[in-house]
Length: 140
Image 1: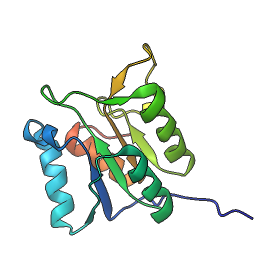
Image 2: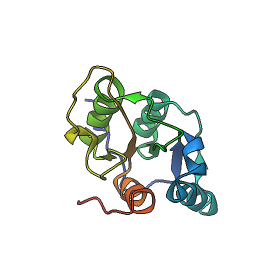
Image 3: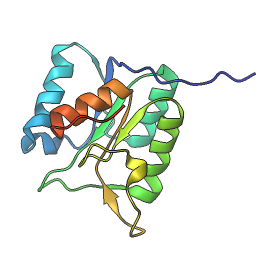
């Protein structure tokens, strides 16, 4: 029988993407500093696919890809953020749309090439992202 993959609520692995946004978004710079101060494992590929695959293998992790005015969204909602968000949520993790703090799965697809910010992974870490970067709390 196959093992059921469950992503833990907490994580010691973080995978920040779009680090240029940290120059303009103080909350993102603070979040990165927090993980460094906690001596968490930094996984910096900047790639959604390898970082989510590691979350499923290690059963923990946080992938973040926020935006700023000079560092716009690159990930496509329909083909990258939403499908991988679905996988993460099915494995017990959480997602954030990177703007309101709601699930990436609640964002309506309005264009084939629609781009989006995203955070996904261990639920407590997604909540930390929402609190520090978006100044909001994600409902549990």
